[in-house]
Length: 111
Image (cartoon, rainbow, N blue to C red; front, side):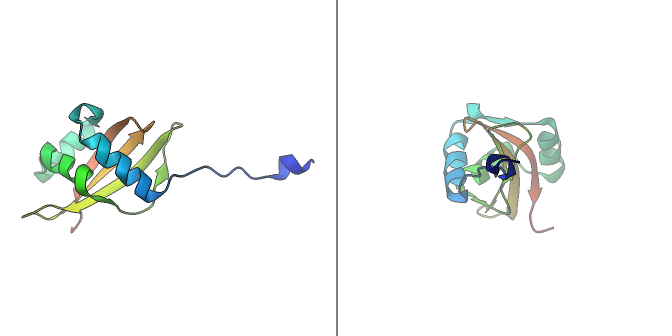
């Protein structure tokens, strides 16, 4: 076996601060944020509005590990924020090719 064949490939993960900044910037433009059916169902069930979820994406911080998505160029991040007069909300989002956000689910963090 050659030396090249023995090397392990390590997937590149951007720094947390970089992804937070990209998510915040993308969330400023509503046209770049897509809410999946599961997210919409959980928002209705939990009484979390679209505006609240967008505010979490715009002002929150990444909580937990950043996961590589199923497709190349995807990263899964949970953004969390405590909104004024509210509880702490988590928004699980997938950053797609650093151009769009797909909201997978929303949840109350204090349950």
